Amino acid sequence: AKAAGGARWSLFDADRNRRELARYALSAAIPGALERGEFFLDYQPLTSLRDGTLLGVEALVRWRHPELGVLRPDSFIGLAEETGLIVQLGGWVLAEACREAESWAAGRDDAPFVSVNLAVRQVRRPGLVQEVRALLGRTGLPPERLQLEITESTMMSTVEEPVRALRVLADLGVRIAIDDFGTGYCNLAYLRDLPVTELKVAGEFVAGLRAPATDPASRTDERILGSLVSLAHALDLTVTAEGVETADQAERLRTIGCDAGQGWHFGRPAPADQILARLARARRA
Ligand code: C2E
Ligand code: CA
Ligand code: CA
Image 1 (cartoon, helix red, strand yellow):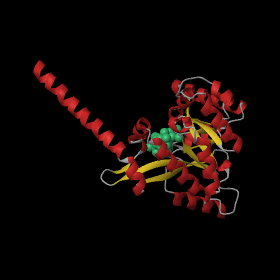
Image 2 (spheres, helix red, strand yellow; image 1 turned 180 degrees about the horizontal axis):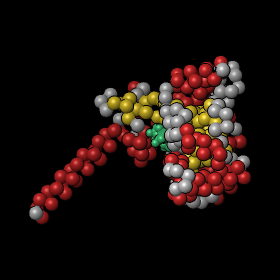
Image 3 (cartoon, rainbow, N blue to C red; image 1 turned 90 degrees about the vertical axis):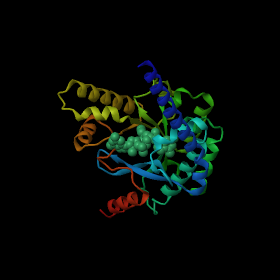
Image 4 (tube, rainbow, N blue to C red; image 1 turned 30 degrees about the vertical axis):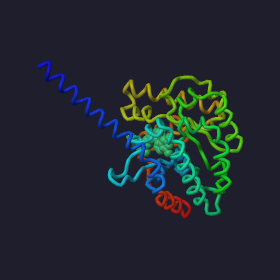
């Protein structure tokens, strides 16, 4: 029985090795995939809870892999961060998102902003300010129509220099959002030290709202959300709730005082032309 157990373990190890190898092969393929144009962006609406207008969209990267099909970011972003390739890939995402978003204005000032996820490596890179400034210059996208999403853990592992970079970007008018707020280390010092403009509250708090309001766990989530909204508004920040899946959740979030919602209830991540169609419909209405 012992021998059989040992054999199972080595089988398991072989399996794990194979998976690790596959991961590294995937990572090694990123530069070529960038050259061949295999990455593309979907955009997900950030909708006002007060009047339903489209405030912004989040750019979410996908990889149209020739053999594996369309890959979600969770299967390659972590890898790209480990290997440093995220700087190249993230640079492409930033450029593509700005280029696309610029075309949404069509001479009007009601165009949504585009929100781009920044990995810690990108924030730490000395050239970030220059990269963004050059990009805004080249595409003509006004700084207020670009939002950068950083996570709490990015802030925790970030030293003074990158914080200064974010401040320069904020002074230009670029929006800075804290992504997945409430799930990282609870250190609020960065809210004081950083030019943050928005908190994006993690979907797990919103998911709790699914239970009936009398459910104690649901009431706790509702109180946490209420406190986060009070904190944010006291600091002049806006709050977007993520992972809003039902009309009931949207209504409760509105009552709590959340400014915006993102999630399947308002729209799944979709190609840019669907965002444009929605914008055109809203402008005709
Ligand atoms: P995130 O920034 O928290 O993005 C939101 C994720 O939640 C997206 O998954 C989105 O499809 C999903 N989502 C949206 N609405 C709902 C909902 O109502 N219910 C549920 N259950 N899920 C919802 P996606 O596109 O797979 O992205 C996963 C993560 O990958 C993102 O999480 C983000 O951290 C990362 N990511 C995506 N694009 C980029 C990028 O360009 N750069 C970097 N560094 N990270 C990226
Ligand atoms: Ca995000
Ligand atoms: Ca998020």
